[in-house]
Length: 295
Image 1 (tube, rainbow, N blue to C red):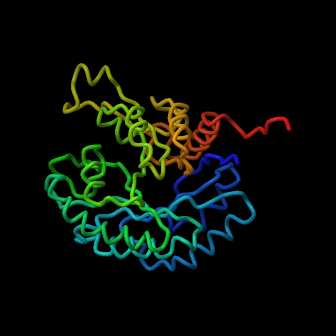
Image 2 (tube, rainbow, N blue to C red):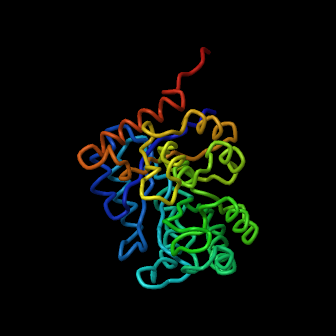
């Protein structure tokens, strides 16, 4: 049976009930709900109920729910991040999703290698908690300005780190929340990477990048000139038809949810103009609307 590769967008969890009714008529087919470092005092079961009411009878799904803080340290504003992971895992079924996403966290300002034991401890337990509830976990591949040697948010931004992570926690229900942008700004070619790692990709963020190779070649990546920009799909360098092809060849059953609010041009009053353009562009990249074969 045909399974659509839905195209949607990210919506803040705290704002979902207000925002979804305003943007659903544009044709988004899924929403990924995100919280920053904590779900706060949100009643997640009640939020899910209100989100379902906001969606109404539209053919829209909640693809994932996520929290983006540092659960490995619990320091400062991350004090509630680990508990938020647990709450989202426990409440995912209310939203009709089996996917909880976020950053891995890391030991602050230490090399990635030194975060692996704590990662294994924290996410070994979370993966078991999730498996007991039929939930999968996916890590966004954003470096948050970190490197291999230092950083304070996330270790899941490099394929060598992925190998270390998945060896440390060899669970079938942990994978990646992947997008080409975060690899491109590290000058990694995303297409062969996706082909290699697609079986571990549980969710795709619709975010692209533009690389100014003339600046890279003349000034390098450590000079004063910007050499890469995060872009809304349809305005960047990635061939999203290739992305869709690789996903479908691998039997991907997830969604592509646009991560807006980053494009240097389609921002401010042009934000939704850019996102709706990306929505329609990505629908074309998947082949347009489904057309049944003759009986």
